[in-house]
Image (tube, rainbow, N blue to C red; front, side, top):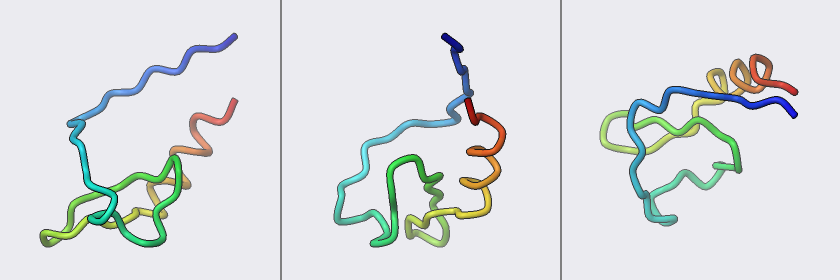
Length: 52
């Protein structure tokens, strides 16, 4: 079994109503101009990097 370790800059609880409608499990979520957004580019990069 492989173990994956990641540095989490900051973990916070976000109410579901504040998440973007297109957010899915495993998405990288960023705060941009006071709004939470799914960052597709970063999500894709991390999925490629950490693919088991």
